Image (cartoon, rainbow, N blue to C red; front, top):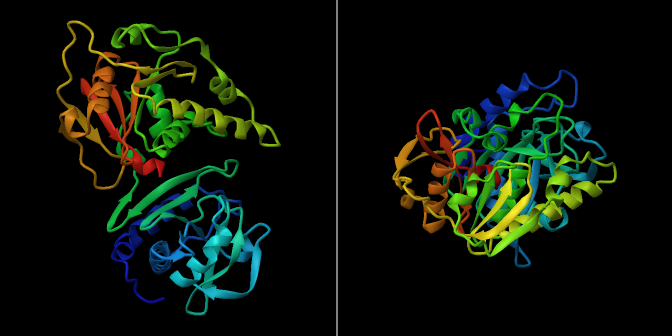
Length: 376
């Protein structure tokens, strides 16, 4: 394997190897989790090929693909090519139209002195290296974290020359509302459980509609949040809309009907955030209102500063004025989080940035968590 032409691939390779090595001890010996771990040369080659493939177009379409570092023997029901293809940007771009559907991974493994594409698979072991191409110059490294879950966790995001390697444990959210911990620290879930991660799904869907929006998550049964809202509420929901709450609490079904219904319900609620104003749900995911206007209650101080944090390696917490993060949505969301310490405010920007505002009792100020790297 030669040296890559994409500098970010070489710069991040060793750190990504260290991440997968650190997680190797968490995999069950001999079980589904015993996925092969790439060395720095393999990581560099995979990222380099995927990056240059992302910049090519086939019949007017960009290559949207997912690669996994896996031998065909470790794959379940693999689709095998009779002659493996050398790993390269042209090979991946030509193959892209056939594998762009979600859930299909291009299998890459060693052949001779290099790496080759051996075919495709729909399943990958826990902690297997997966590299997804989401657009020109936009790549995400991810892995599954549990054998019984189909969900993937982002490890790193490549965007042009910039690389963000995620470090969830680098941000302490222990003194924040429970709903914040469910978004930023899902590993705190009880062993053996498979959390629905509704808030994460809502955040992803909010970001996807690209119109910008705000979501206020308030305590179930509480009324204090209303003092921070302009009345009358034009789009109040009565009684509370409970479809999302009911689907979140239902047990999964073998046919996957519940998962499909949950996805539709999440998209429906997230779509309401595109309306001017904020959408309000409870921490049990009951919809209370949308299009609401946030106000500062009488005699409450105006929010002047927030502590900005990002769950990535090398990120340094900084104190900024809310206006430095964005416009009216960000300022009003920071004010809401300060006045309603048991609530959380999520803000999606039109440019893809995503910020979660929550009150920190320890620091006596609002924390602004930049989390778009978790959502791509």
